[in-house]
Amino acid sequence: MAFAKLFDDQRERLRRLIRLRLDRRLSGRVDSDDVLQEAYLEAQRRLPDYARDSQAMPFHLWLRLVTGQKLTDLHRFHLAARARDAGMEVSLHRGAFPQANSVSLAAQLLGRMTSASRKAIRAEHKVILQEALNGMDNDRPRGAHPAPL
Image (cartoon, rainbow, N blue to C red):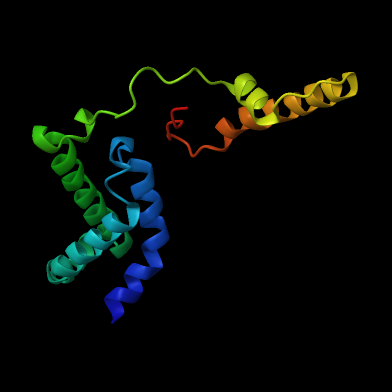
């Protein structure tokens, strides 16, 4: 079907749009592929309306619009209704999580070494590992929030 081919041509762009705009509180409930599937079905249902007035906007923009509207609907469904509000979910973990930063993570990952030469090697590895952990923030997509440690 021509519609399926046109949608597939835009799939990765739409997936990036969803990942960028999906509220992180929904990450355990909603997957970007689920939103894509919902958007596909909605666009397919609304295709006759678009075909009647296709001069209004290019197809790829219309698909972005439909996908954005579907994403908004999912946000409303999951975040607006108090009974199923993802923001109201409570962790089963009791107590505060221990503080973690690149220094403590590097120390835990490297373990304990005792000899003088091992201490020097460990210190060198610790610096390298800290730099790698600190550099991970720079690899995050723009606008994304860091995952809690």
